[in-house]
Length: 291
Image 1: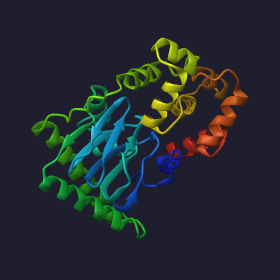
Image 2: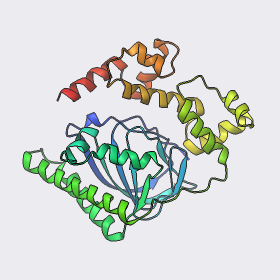
Image 3: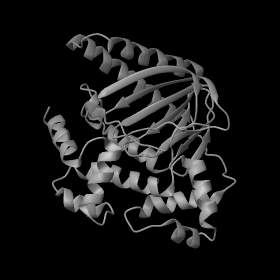
Image 4: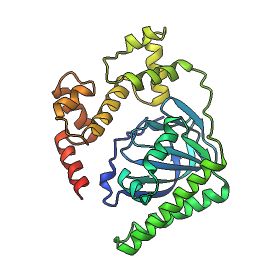
């Protein structure tokens, strides 16, 4: 199957700091493992097959909701082309999620804590899922017209309604368990890479560490993530560098902290993945924070 090229899409392309979509795709194929710099609340309605989150794999069932904090790797998997794949999702910049907490609850820490314990997905009832989709569609429809204070207030009201449904699911249902992987080596390799990707790593070293051949490891890893090991490591390093740019360290320092041996390699890789040089991205990020 032809793979989709999923370039990293920053939330700052949305001036409001949030996006809502209800989508039905007649045909859909596998996606690369990727991540965002925003929170994604993703509801699978029907038509999908498998969702991978970090080193876990889940069979997609109707009305299954995923909580994906910033920089959590995830991607669709399938054994055949998917048809009439329906999903609804709400993307929230951390700043917006903080506002939705109304100073009463730290929603950023709240949702991160669930994900950090491996609680990525919950099952919604049909009624709750239909309400979630209805609110998402209303936010999406208003986005087609110029924003005004009343429309934005209505958006915030319905986003809080979506988060209320999610919190109810936390209290009423247990997290959906991941599938038992027939190839546990890939799960273990992913866990290791996710912990050590800023260190020098190579396919041969990983293969020796997990007692498999390099060719086998390369094939199985690509089949699971739709990325080569080399590409996956570079991608994770660049995503980390984007997080580091929120601080005051120099770009040179960030490059070395994220596992690059020289700045020129960091510059070339960052520009290819993000679509702009790191200096331009940091300037854009600072402008967004100021606004």
